[in-house]
Structure formats: structure tokens, C-alpha cells
Length: 375
Image (cartoon, rainbow, N blue to C red):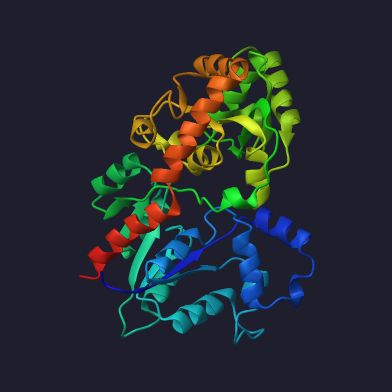
């Protein structure tokens, strides 16, 4: 195995950062390394989990959270006249990576992407990226600058390959260490959904339909997250008055979103987690983060029917799948009425995730792809 240095350039949600710094008001007293350690230990999103595993494999690998301004300003050599992009370039020059992984191919302009790729010239940096959403014009403009592109669904791999792009399957994953950080608790025999609803015909209008069905069937649920856009713009079934009532009920039911360890602590409180992929994934693609977060925590996953589900889990033994929103409501009710059976499915799903869907698995997969670039 050829050795290399890998630097990931990634971002953290603004809402998460606001909550983190509200909770840690003394961050000004911390060094860059101390603040970085606190952030990654909070286990937000992918944190630095894959880099910990790559380091165990003997590969020098780390992440830079380029939009975390409070953190970036603590970087050595920072001066007030430096832009945050200048800080990033300084970090690249300091680490001297052989490969740079950009967590969102559309994150930078084409000019910035070229500057990142060429900032160690004459050394040639291999540039790889991640993209797990619709193939819009911005993505298609940026993608040719990358040596490899990774995505979390085989359906997106096929779509990218059809454009002649070097795309590879790199699934989301779960970090078993989170189980040691989340305290045990008594689970509620209820349904939860943790995530956002972006009102758009190509993104999350189907999630509005999902909540609508739960309300109509009087299935109790807790929704932690945010709604972006007007629910009145969606095509809820029923007359205008009913649509308005359902939209109001969904809005009223929203609880504040949760991130990092707080997210997992909430997930751990419920017997069942509801999941629904974005519309842009089509009818085939599966593998969003919630699938592995829920199963990893030992919460029974109730997710939408996708061709790829069977590649990830044993249907009805490790996860529960629904074919329609009517079917979803029926199975949600069944799981509430049969908590013992639901727990058996949840534990089987957790066992599968801890075997096949960890960041160790993901690191090994990524390393195989990167070795191809180093030949």
C-alpha cells in the first residue's frame, strides 16, 4: 500500500456552529487544537471519524472546517488582513497533502478550486470530491476539475458515469464510539424524525406528504428540525381548508433541531426512526446518513422503499420498508403496537451497521479508490 497525506476540506452547518458557540462561551481562551478537539468530539455529522480510521491504517489524514471562522482565526500565522480562503491555502501549504478531498464539489468557485489544486505547484495534488444530491449545472461545471468523485448511492454513481465522470460509491457510515458517549435511557414507544424539510419539488415536498399522512392517521410522532419555505406551496391532498389545517399542524409540531451528540441522544430516546430520501434520489437510490445513524444507535429504521435498500440491510429483519405513505402509516402503527418485534429488528439493524457500515469500512473503501490515483 502506497502511503500519502490526505487533507479534507469540509464545512459545518451555520446553525450547528451558533449552538456550539452559545454552549461554549469560553472558546476564545482555547487554542486552535483545543477548539478543534472539542468540535470533533461533539460528533457533528461526519466529524473527523474517517481520518481517525485512516490514521490507524498508517495514513496521515486530517480535516479542515473551512467555514468555522472562530476556529480558523486561531490558525497559526493568522493576521487580520488574511481572508478565510487565504487561511485555507495556508493550511494546505502547511500540511502539504498529496490528495485533497473536498466534501462538497460545489463548495468553491472554479477559480478557487483551481487555486486549491495548484497551490503546491510544481507538486501535483490529486483532487477528489464528494457530491450526494441532484446533478445541477453548478456541479456539472465543477466536476471535470476532479480526479475522482464520490457519492453515497449507486443511482448517483450511474448518473455521474453517464456524463463521463469518474464517480465511485462511498457510502455514509456510523462511528461506534458514539455509543460510548450517549447515556443509556428508557426509550419512548413512539416515532421520531430528525432532519429538515426544504419545500421544493425536487427536494423535500415528499416529506410534507409523509407528515400529512401521519396526521391523517393520527399516528403520534416527534419532528426535530426546521422547515425551509412555505408549506402552502406544496401539493397536499384534500381541499384548501384541510391543506391549511395540515400545514398548520406540521408547523406546530416542529421541535428545535439537534446536532452532534445531542442529535444522537434524542435518537436514542425513541423506538422507531422515520426516514424518507430526497426526491432527487429518484426511485432507486438509498443510503442517506439517517439510515446509518438510526440503525447504529439501535433505533428501528422505518424507511421508504428503494432498490438499494437490500444492498444495505435485510428487509423486514434489519429495517422496515414502506411502499407508500399509507403503508408507512400502517407500519408505523404496527411498530408502536409491537415494540418487542420492533426492538428485535432494531438490534439486528444495529448489528449489521456495526459490522458493515462503520467509518472503518468507509476508510478502507476510500483508501482503495485513492490507491488507484497513486499508481
